[in-house]
Amino acid sequence: MTSIKTSFPWISNPLIINAPMADNAGGLLAATVTLAGGFGLIGTKVDMSITRRELNIAKDTFAAHPSTPHSQSSTLNIGVGFLPFVLKLDDALAVVKEFKPAVVWLFAAKQFDDYAVWAKAVREVSPKSQIWVQAGSVASALQIAEQTKPDALCLQGADAGGHGFEKGSGIISLLPETADAFEAAGFRDVALLASGGIMDGRGVAAAMSLGAAGVVMGTRFLASKEALVHPMVQASILEAKDGGQITTRSKLFDQLSGPNIWPEVYDGRSLVVKSHKEYVEGVSLEEIQKKHKEALKEEDLGWKTGLEGRAAIWAGTGVGLAKEVDSASEIVETVRNEARKRLSLAAKF
Ligand SMILES: Cc1cc2nc3c(=O)[nH]c(=O)nc-3n(C[C@H](O)[C@H](O)[C@H](O)COP(=O)(O)O)c2cc1C
Image (tube, rainbow, N blue to C red; front, side):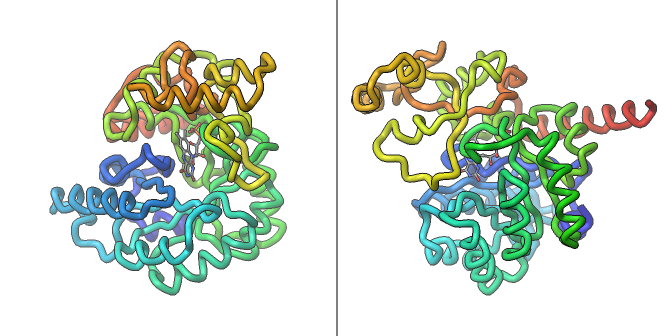
């Protein structure tokens, strides 16, 4: 935590970070989270004109708060999440050079070695940008720490919404085992963050007790006013209950639009939408893809409530704890206060 807190003094403990959700986490969400004393991240895919648009929105949001440190800072006090397996390094570098984000977040490289190449190049064009990498196993975390030397490593548990390691464990075992392995290997400068299923102050307190320096929350921020999210997706998130039953991990979700382009180690967690139900019932992939293609032409783009849609709705197992849409600043403040209370109660045992 020391390195993160020293570099980003506006952060209030415990550190709450919104996940860089491509298509869903834009500049307004990221800047609002940072302004609330957390750390905001923008998600990106391959179209860097969208990334630039969202970075400019974050810049404008900070400029509208001239009394904060963010309007004067030499770095843009949010991070940008890149997916190296699908994006050209040069395209990402041009954005990093132009905007100097405080953090460059990397997730889903073709091979774990690639992170080191990306980190070196990012450090050359923007030496002040921290490198944060997300991974889902002890072995990959050790490899990335050794080769890439990230400032932070986010351990993503199997409960996480969206893409993650197909084979995984929850953070309750992943985080301490990785922390022990890092201690033994002498990697003491890498801050460990936790993600996957964290929805409220109780989850944050649990992660902090496990030794996390901060938490990354995706699904909870899908139910925020600032998220860029289709109303049907947000309504589906709010109505979902019993996350271990209503969500599932599968590679099917990456095959709905055609061949799966994700590296082998990844699959994704989505609500159990109609496409998945039919897949389990034995309907052919070809037929499912055909129906999915048709559904995308509908007004709701294939998303429906009641698990009736055909398109994936990425969400973590904590989805049943998302009960209302709040502003991102309220989420950060409420979750932080609740976590503090929980931690001080736990200290009395
Ligand atoms: C809708 C959605 C989209 C996501 N997109 C990305 C992404 O573009 N890049 C990334 O690094 N992680 C992405 N993730 C994964 C998050 O980084 C994080 O691991 C996850 O949200 C944590 O679990 P939670 O959703 O239970 O909080 C996404 C997650 C969700 C729910």
